[in-house]
Image (cartoon, rainbow, N blue to C red; front, top):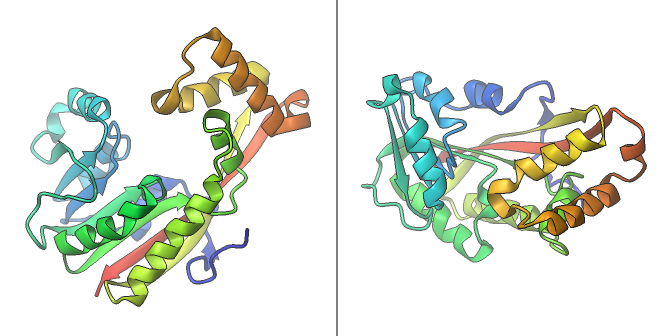
Length: 247
């Protein structure tokens, strides 16, 4: 696959997601909506920068965990809600900034246009949308096949990018900027690699028993190939950050 020319422009490989959000998202004194907040990994770290932040997710378990672990000093500023991105029960123009971290490409393709229209509706005029996702050509897509054999995850991201480009062409948003960055993962040996990969996706599709764990390990071996026999084991994820402005 080739990178989508209309989105990828520069490289900021030294930054992680939090650094990128802090640099590129308008947060100071803003009402923020985070779609697909999960257990609040980013929410609680971004909250001190914002006026208020609402985190939404489709997973009842993840929202429950987010609520139960919310620090006491953030409870007046942070709210979590269980809801889909296609039906946001907020008034028009409720938020200044909307964030989606590794979420948009996971929204079913048939729901993405409706989600973008809902995002446009609840965003204030001139408001900002910040999306972080893998690039379509990231080698990390191979790991998705560990728990979703046969899925072309990179093609899913490419189709998601096309939806974003279409929303810009239809006049819902203006493209503000787009950057590319990469994340490097390094593990000292085979067992720590297994633990990291299995643990990272345990909340998505945890192996049901030892037999399935064994199958996952075989798939990890296949994905990494000879690298598994030459510690440290290093692999990369290539990501993109896209910022849009409500037209």
